[in-house]
Length: 408
Image 1 (cartoon, helix red, strand yellow):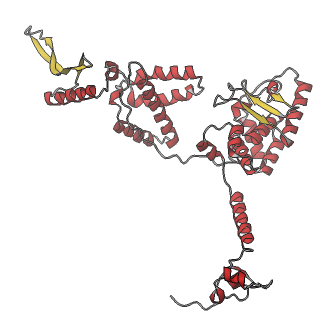
Image 2 (spheres, one colour):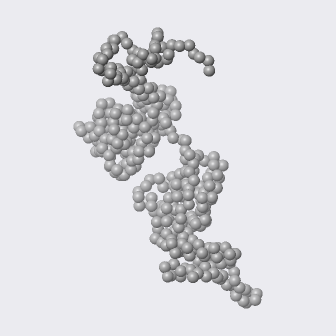
Image 3 (cartoon, one colour):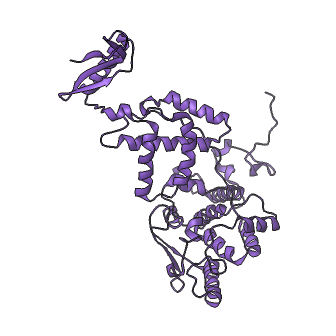
């Protein structure tokens, strides 16, 4: 049975001990006494807090003292340690998220972070003209912090509240037509040509191609026509094997010849004067302006890689393996459909239905009478016997009846 009490403090004027501060409660959890503040100054509210704590203890929902003491800042170190242990590369991005989260949740106890407070945070960020995607990533950061805190021993977070999510409509749908890709590749510097070709034909990520951790010649086998990516290079931490053919293989062979001739000791497939490079935005934009392409990004080539593989009839599971997509939902975002695809679908449907027109509906009685169908007859002439649709002129091509239209 629990009890309520108030701590006492000696009054310097009277010298007597007087109750002060909020009500405290004492209850038992698995036979062990637990002393905790109710954070209530009214005894009735404190009694409710005691009953709630005893109910959780009876249900086995143990709440240690850390749950009630943990503050927002205490969870940041757990998040940083998780990034270090798992070798994640986006910690600088998380630091940007924490800057905005601190403005609202700094020095706040974690148990006080409720759905209402999260909604207030969303409203504030929207008033600051932050995009929906940015707000969602910031909330993901806080959610991850609370999940890690709940997994600590003893747990630092008792219950994770519901996190609101905003709808994101900023998914890019850019891609290159093949002639656009060839035109852009023709006007770009040589060190970008190779990177473009790899991305266009494989859907590899930019950081898997260029930079100090990018593709090296010891990973390329021109005789076999293959590229082998190590798990340390990929975002999903899974190794991949990619095969080359046609124009792709020709460009790689040409790049190898130029490397052997000019920079024989350079280990990188994509290099600039024998040294790796991390970005080429200036050269990229200049090349796009030169041929009249606006708003195109290098990442659009990755979408092309996925789209080309699917259009070429490669099974989607194989295409995901080549491009390095781990989940189907993200893969579908890259498998973009354009107007040309929709037009081709309509043509295929018309061809299919045209082939189906040669099949006639025949009854057993028709077979018994060996009814002969004239070669110059239309299908609609024999549907429904003699009372079916009568066709005249060219209207039978669309299936309309040649009769006057009655008023409605």
